Amino acid sequence: MGRLDAKVMLVSGGGADGPPQPGEKFAMGNGRAIAIAGARQGAAVMVADRSLAAAAETVEMIRAEGGRAQAFEADVRVEDSCRGAVAAAAAAFGGLHLLVNNVGIAIGHTLQSPSAEFDRAIEVNVRGHLLMMRYAIPEMIKAGGGAIVNVSSVSAVRGGGVSYAASKAAIAGLSRAVALAHAKDGIRVNTVLPGAIDSAMARRLAGDREAQVAPQIPLGRQGTPWEVAKAVLFLLSDDASYITAVELLVDGGVAARLAYA
Ligand SMILES: NC(=O)c1ccc[n+]([C@@H]2O[C@H](COP(=O)([O-])OP(=O)(O)OC[C@H]3O[C@@H](n4cnc5c(N)ncnc54)[C@H](O)[C@@H]3O)[C@@H](O)[C@H]2O)c1
Image (cartoon, rainbow, N blue to C red; front, side, top):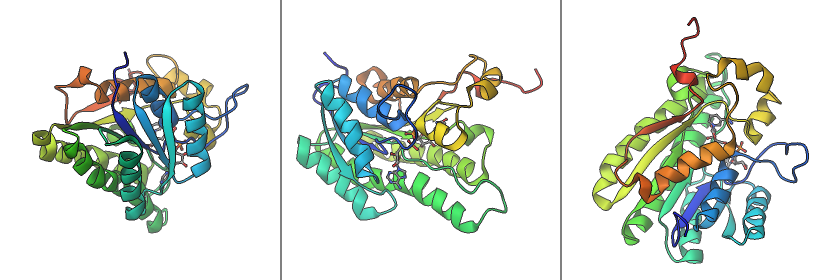
């Protein structure tokens, strides 16, 4: 018995964009780990990604374990793509109960970065989450309720690149507002804030940063995409049936740490 048996789950950014770890066939990112972990818990998973090839790799990994999944090409900047991803999930698996908005990009690092980079960060990181929820929630209402997890970052509460931090903080406000608006529909909306995760994204942007960042993290190491996935699955599952409108840090304690202590 899985915790998500009979559920249909849509993961945006369910591929992975970066180099595989030595010895691994495919890269592992947060979105991919969430999709695979959801399938292991019994969900049928629609893997949406702007890269159909990346989504198809995730599907291949899920099917290799006997899980159910399909790939869908969707760029969250495009409203019709978001509508299409929701429709495809419902058509393929007979409804929609769970949504994870995992897409996130880190651009526009300084105040002097081009304004277009700020706009793009908001478009992808915030508006994309909004659009996916706009179309997913009516399907969840049809299904009698559901749960959403929006992926933010510790940068929402502890700084980081200018546009990234602003967009990741906005996700928390967006999630709370949607959670309050749709609690009456039996839909829970929560936000997960990963810290330093040794993911495809991190390796693409910063290489192997373990030695550099581990000493700054109270638990003494980076997290793994699987540890992010566990938190996301908890919030999606009935184990979190009385939890909505919260932000859950998955950061090894880093947000609690005083730099001078
Ligand atoms: N790795 C970390 O240290 C860390 C820390 C905090 C938060 N996060 C957050 O985790 C999430 C990403 O993690 P990941 O490891 O899955 O990253 P990733 O970069 O591998 O991204 C996952 C997928 O998103 C897809 N994607 C990018 N732009 C898209 C778009 N416009 N539309 C649709 N798909 C798009 C990519 O093709 C990729 O397959 C982001 O929200 C990121 O901000 C990561």
